Length: 122
Image (cartoon, rainbow, N blue to C red; front, side, top):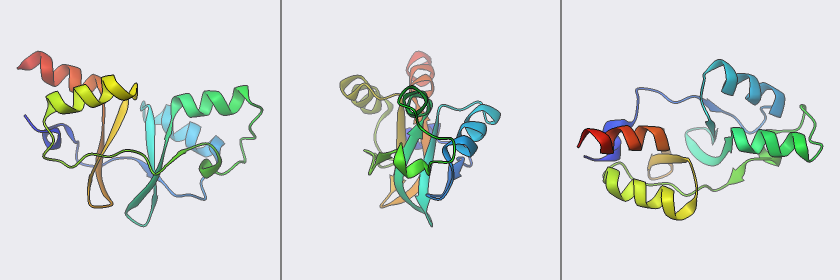
């Protein structure tokens, strides 16, 4: 199975001008652990729930732009990567979220839970 099978119809994304506070609201209301930060359709970063916690712990301001706290230029994988390869990548990096892209365009974000469910079914 390829990771493209795990990508849902649409991902929740924010722009670089989004505030940390607004991004936190989006994470909670969407019950998700990560947001892609996009400029147009190009992925420029990823902001995770861990980043928000780090921001709070380090005295971040809810009005800070997400670009202050996101991971710039996150690792991404193409849709044809196997679920097994994605699992290996997540284990090796310690990340919990995997942006799936075609070129620089986001298809979606697959998280470790998606990968585990897919592996369990095989």
